[in-house]
Image (cartoon, rainbow, N blue to C red; front, top):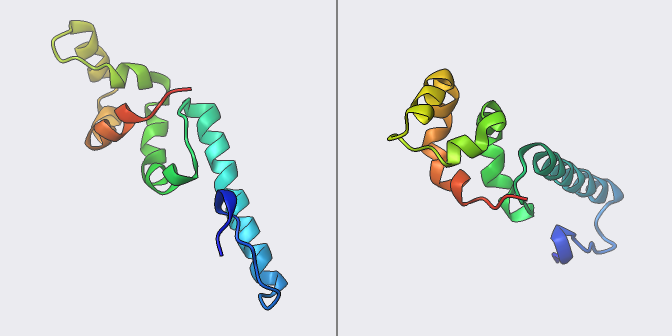
Length: 106
């Protein structure tokens, strides 16, 4: 039975080791989410973990210029120059542009 915030209320028949393993995995997820919130500035929750975890390493490459990535405009010369300087990182994150754009900022 699943409870609040992903906690599972175990029956007494489930071993202590299984309970500890579940607790460790839940704590690991929560620590990653706190790290991402602090360093990337996105409002993330447990529901966002799977999707964000897939692209977290790509976002790490543009974390210094996330706002410029979200507000990128091909008509502005400054944006094109900035794109040229960060081309590799931008190209990695471009397939996930809509997802990154729709994430709420803190």
